[in-house]
Length: 451
Figure 1: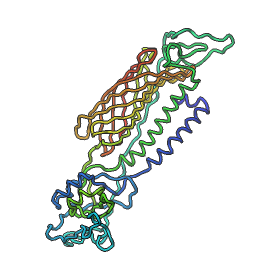
Figure 2: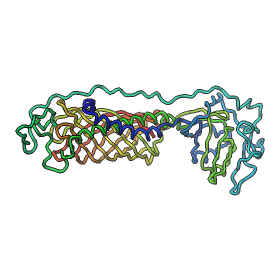
Figure 3: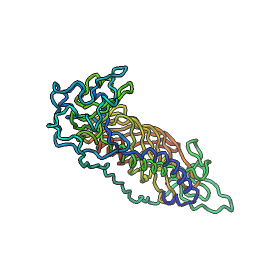
Figure 4: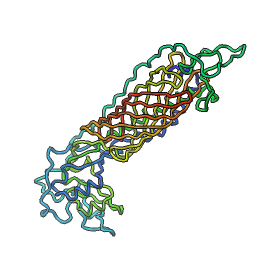
């Protein structure tokens, strides 16, 4: 591919323009970072409201938000203290509402709503809690240390042996200079004026100009570069945020936003079942109150996902039984309906040198169904099946391409790193049908998944 990109300013300019066009929106979307806010899911809040107040903060499911961090996280105490017995608490303790809005929600005002820094713990015996608002130096831990994968040198292929022409042998004009470019596939011999055969079917053609094969290489380079840039940004933001269980004091302030739009700040131990049922969003902050202690994370695949991997590709063209070896990458975007089953749009981009002077590409575009039925601690075992369109291309001669249907499957392994990021490994095989025959392929690749 590197040799191809040096062929002329036209190709280099095309790569630059396409890269800039794709990088602008991706850069804007990948610029986020983890916030000091953690969202308590609604189901979890309803469950906590049914737990005795002194036990509510033992294990709480919380998901860190994406956004700006206003200050460093508070280092939580070694042991969270339980609140006073319920009978000692006044009716309006810790921000519990004494006045209600039109629909019965607690509302904030300058008189009846305690502030976080002043009296959110007003009903706690000061002998039990020395000072919940003394700032202790916290440590902001960065995202996972992501190391790039160094790709080795492109494997060189042996020069093809005896070959034969497909279709009628092309003729050469009397004064035409003989071509010096390589053949399109090992089964297609060099000729003085020909290249990859374009007769015998509509799936292969050379009338699209000399840059059809080169365009496939350019698009693959740009797509992989944009995907890699997006993955780096997502690993530092979405992949780094915490999704799991935390420990907090029953006196930790919880910011409630009701379905009607009203808001209130209530200690975790004072939230009633009625308040939990009417809450749209519940948030806690790691830089206020006694602080949060992060316990364990669990990989939650539900929702949108983005995956990128790199690996090796071995395939046979439709007109030859010689196996070519090269590089491949899978760019996937999709949605997991459940934590175990997802459907992803997949672009498998691969290619190899023919050992002469041309670059051969083999791309696949389609849908892929993934399932992860087995989980062994942080390791998740699964499988996939896919189908779609396959494209063969060459930069030799006329720069021709061929298209056909493809399908395949294989095995998946994921190792969760955080609650939103996992390392991936896939190994599988597929087969495509072109006008010239069948084209089998096998891949092994490793990468990263963001959920």
